[in-house]
Length: 527
Ligand code: NOJ
Image (cartoon, rainbow, N blue to C red):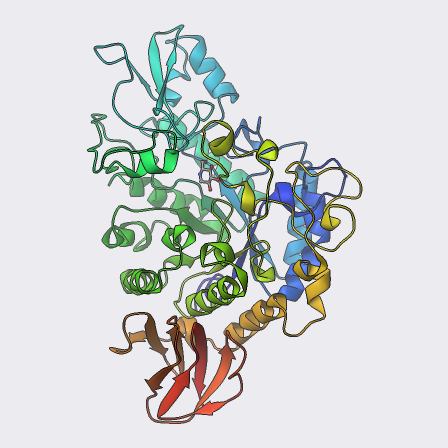
């Protein structure tokens, strides 16, 4: 028997933007609880909540100032308990986010660490003396722009931060930090959490000698944090071998609760993936490349296949999350982008592991159009860098009442034009051909075909290029992401198209050479 997540599909929720029950412009846990019937109807099995903990909000919750308290803008612990109880009654699991790479600079640990070099909390963080020229101790850069070091004038030492200066990195070589987090994991499991999505799971350990990262390519736009970050080989600040020891320890902590550990992990190479998920560490990792890629079908399929071959059960597949442009936009925009997004998601539903949808993906949403004066993401507000991640974080469009039904009268925290009826849940629910119903149907078909995650994966030698096929038990998934229809030679037998992301072939019985429409994925089962 597999664990509870075997065969499950998850749904990511950004609590700030999902539903605002108390009408203050910020989404809250109670608003989310009231929307659980929608998620149950959609057919997801688990929800993952982005951070809702106490936080000054420099990175909208990924800067946690108390790991066991609810940020009052999102509610309180009683709301959390009610949410979990209601979700469990509906058969939905609740995965919460944990942010162990860094805390907020407002956390009392950091406040006390800064007070003196002798504070018992000093060693909870990473402090280094300046380089000989007085500058930062090495060449590491922050994901969000600028160096990964900020000088603490009072003590004359720099603190390390792979993200904002207000997100100081914790020192995971300190046993006291490890113990603190054991307690935090237990706290949420005791309250009913079914697992954790671990933020920057590959970042916790650093090179013991804090060596410079080699620079791979010259930097053309120093104001573009993604380009600057990508110009280095992150040999020494990320994906250190010793990191996985932490997850083996966590695995022992959460084991009695039957909880899942899902790492937001970006290993340097695909062959390092198994280090995290094989054995007794993490259960799955989010594979993030497809979230950031534009429409390059050959490359996308190469990566998916390589990743599936590296681990069939250990991947949480995603094409959308709260950190990137929406897939329908990245994959070319318009109706083409929407079809491509669904074709990719359909194929991911046949790759084993634990796939996730991101709120609004099921509506086929494109990026929101935002005025630059309304941007909130620190990547945008602290760099001359344009739009950042806000385009995907606007409120969930429920209907065409005030703020698309997100709040009763309040202006949402992230101001954007309302979406039209056809982009809302209310506008799509009754239309069998809507993106919403196509996604719902996909989840229901996946559930009816356990071979899609239990069968042993066998990749067909052909087709290659921008098409791939995979057999598992009595099911086959064929993705044809090219621009022309394709012929695919089916193994002997009569194969029923159980799901077709284009919707034109569902129900057909195929045998021998079968035609697969352009930019479509078919799920077939042997009759
Ligand atoms: C990854 C999260 O998904 C992102 O939203 C956040 O800004 C960084 N980690 C830092 O915590």
